Image 1 (cartoon, rainbow, N blue to C red):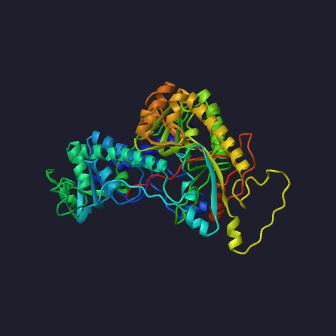
Image 2: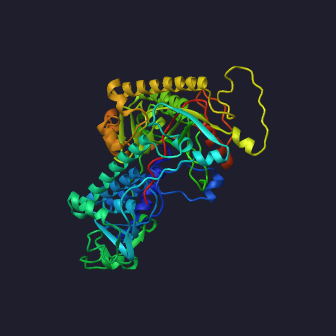
Image 3: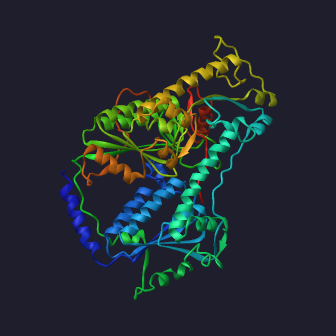
Amino acid sequence: MLLYPLRYLWWLVSSIRRSIGRPPDFVLFVLEENLPALPDPPPPLWQRFVSRPRLSVKELGERFDAMARDARIKGVVLHLRSAGMSMATLQDLRELVGRLRKAGKRVVAWAPSYGTGAYYLACACDEILLMPTGSVRALGFSSTSLFLADGLARLGLGADFVQVSPYKSAADPLTKSSMSDELREQISWLLESQHEELLTAIAESRLLDSAGAKELIDCSPYGDDVAVEKRAVDRVVGEEGLPAHLARGAGAPVSIGTWERASRKMRTPPPTLRLRKYVALMRIEGTIIDGRSGHLPIKPPFEVPLVGDDRAGDLSVVQVARQVAADKRAAAVVLYVNSRGGSSTASEAMRHALAVVGQRKPIVVVMGPVAASGGYWVSMPGSWIVARPGTITGSIGVLSGKIVTGSMWEKLLFSRETIARGDRVLLESDERPFTDEERSIVRADITRIYNAFLRLVESARKMTSDELAPIAQGKVWSGRQALERKLVDELGGLDAGLAKARALAGLSDKVPMREVRRPRRVIPPLAEPAPAAGWFGYLLEGFSLLSAAPALAVMEYLPGDLT
């Protein structure tokens, strides 16, 4: 409050400076990599000099909103590259484009070539432009699964897992040589759901009926020589020819500039005091682990389940939840969940802390690309759940097991000898698979946790056991399929979640949303922090999660991002 007059004076001087001159007519955005939904947390000081911050969907939306308020800006050019994005992220971006178009701005998509993801996003724009010699590549969806059991066996490695049902297939890549019927069934219904979303988008954009949209997909790819004729794109034009193309009918030259140039000439709203109520934004992103949250500064060059992912630790998330619960200014909570799950004990610790928050203020869960298994577990304290049609969710199930390394040491001619006391102390040993007795113990344990999971969902979603049983069993659903099965309440993104949180708390539309960071001071009870892990430490930790003592509530990797 003491600094507010200075902030207001700075805004006033800045507004005068910005009013001199004008921003470009069109603002260019190059989308060349996957966009996270929320801004990356501030990295350690040393990392700020070796990596550049990524543009998030939330920040892009704020930029679009600023341009929508400025009558001098006519529109946006989206330069699209083949960046792997999930269906849910693409739907976030399509919503931003739609909102900008409703504000009267022209949105043009341009690309050297269009894959399925880029084309799906382009279909939300006013125009789809293609570079000469470019193409609309083969459109559609596919998912490739890799099964490592036979290859691991040649190395003397194996995996022994127990799952609640064949649909809980997270360990299948390690335990099977080929795709099970249950996994094939799941992938098929997920791809069918995504295919329907693409068909609808193409039909609306290209003014086609369902049969015409299907024909456009099935007859792809299209080179630049036929793309316009086949109505796949509106015009073939080089990037250097964009100003002339955008100026058609305008009667005057059109300028295209970057956001950095435009932002220097755009007026900003006056600063506000931060003494009033707000909606707290929390996030649970990455593999759910027992410990502290963290992420690798550099991703490994290969993808292995649970290895190299961001980590959402219960020690970190619980601290934020306790802080929000105690903050009287935080009138409601939007919880963003983007996680395939992980440790069942960490998921339950987070759920417990969030339930305390939920007793004091409404929680609205907004699901990102994936909120399944443990990611669905931690969503149960929510008064309302919002998901994108392309969100992957569900996977209500549990599995537990271990990586077996005994034969590997024999192949290496290494000798291992173990001396133990206790009849079952070697149950989790990596030297051998489970015995029949041990397998029955593990199955009883995951059945106990699975039943607890079912009871949580039944209570939170107000479902009977007969309603839940057919859609649980580890089965994975798209957001639209989850809505039909009462697993979520609404299709949308962060904006829809914020609107619902405000409504549940009786707040006005002007109440802001602010992300809550982990408190600097410990809010007890809290264990001592674990030592920081380097890249190799994260690798080993990822494999140890696969052999974790607590049951895993984690979802398989399917289907992949779109390019």
